Amino acid sequence: MSEWILQANHLVKTYQQRSGKFGFSTTRVRALDDVSVRLQSGTTLAVVGESGSGKSTLARCLLQLHPLDEGEVLFAGQDLAKLDAASLRSVRKNLQMVFQDPFASLNPRMRVGELVGEGLLIHDMGSRTEQQRKVIAMLKRVGLGEADMQKYPHEFSGGQRQRIGIARALVLHPQVVVCDEPVSALDVSIQAQILLLLKELQQEMALSYIFISHDLRVVRHIADDIVVMHHGKVVEQGKVAEIYDQPQHDYTKQLLAAIPGKGAANGCA
Amino acid sequence: MTDILNINHLVITPKKQPERCLVKAVSFALRAGQTTCIVGESGSGKSLTALSIMGLLSEQLQASGSIQFHGQELMSLDNQALQHIRGAKIGMIFQEPMTALNPVLTVGYQIGESLTAHLGLKGDALRAKVAHLLEMVGIPAGRANSYPDELSGGQRQRVMIAMSIACEPSLLIADEPTTALDVTVQAQILKLLDELKVRMNMAMLFITHDFGVVADIADHVLVMFRGEVVETGTKEEVLGNPKHPYTQALLACVPDAEGRKTLKPIDYSWLEASA
Image (cartoon, rainbow over all chains, first blue to last red; front, side, top):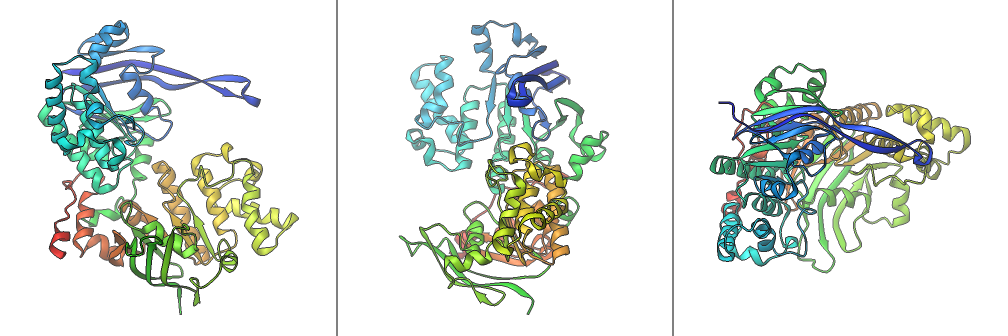
């Protein structure tokens, strides 16, 4: 079974950065340097690395939120960069994103019902009542209620807001969801709830996840495959168990050795 | 008596709502050369407890109870008297190395400030001491003339540590000092703090929400939940054999790097049972 739902081949993305005295000269930074990843349908691919490794740039480039310098992103066989604006928009409903910061990613002036229903409105999916029904069903599925539709984001806790963010992405029934550090701003008890919710939804809706994270403990629990990035390059990729048990690259070994509580925590819980 | 700090029945409430306890009757003691971790979720009162030791609580909050530092009652001291203790005998490291440093002053100047204020060091003696401190935290002494934005996140946190230990405090309070850092940098900073604790025989109060960090650095652990200490003991006792249902539920939420355990959503049923 090797059905690749999303394939990225030889992605290159450079940014211009000011340097030198007073920033008069510029240098190009390679945020993505010949990066190739592929996501198998119905599985979770984790992208791990430290700050500056290029993992968030990769997430945004996969969804065509940033233009690429080189390379191609194939979704269900078609190259996203070659699509015109209208076709890209219609493909986008299959490619959704859950963001890191549930405090910054929801418009504070919109009610939850509008926030979750916005995608349905944009893609003109179903009648108003049908949209309403879908929003309610989705909110209930992520653990919120119908009454929450009338509320504003500030009335919710961090974990609840992340549930709203998930509902907003999933109400469109996408095939691929890119999760950019979806649990790193949350308390550990809430983090476990959200991870379990994401796993359940994956089963129910046959979702494929790209899961961006710096936390190797979280990744171990959610991912099937893993890509380790360092300075814009993929240094290692493979099955989760293989990488954790037999890391080949020095940088992967360093990352694994730096997991807090490793060894010491084995005895507990 | 080896207790550096003795907290007894600490209660923190908002001034306007004295019936609402943010920290409820917290008591513990800290010893020289030992690290005590306060672990809990956001809103559990762990940072408030730390701030009250320094007398840095917000104007809107009031604290009662007793905080004795080397036998001296801190609660009865005025701000001026506290200033002689803060930074000199009690050092503090904050979470955000990006915002805790002044961007328009060199790091050498900022490390030197407390040395001048508390010990009256000046000129060459000051420069030599700053250079020594930078080397202790693993930064080349030449970086004393750098500004904070010229340093990486990990280096800035090392500067913060150099500032906090400059006057050789007997107590170091670290409030989530590694939360904003990458894992490999976090591992280095934890190692550095542990080495300094041993070398200077400090008591360290370490606030964190990360059980992995607790397992790495703690001697003793206090688990806080909604303002109360629900469990306390040695690291081995609390992590290896948790007694309180909240500690058990919280530990069940922590993902392990081996992927052996099944994550569980947090279970609050004990709360209703005990209510």
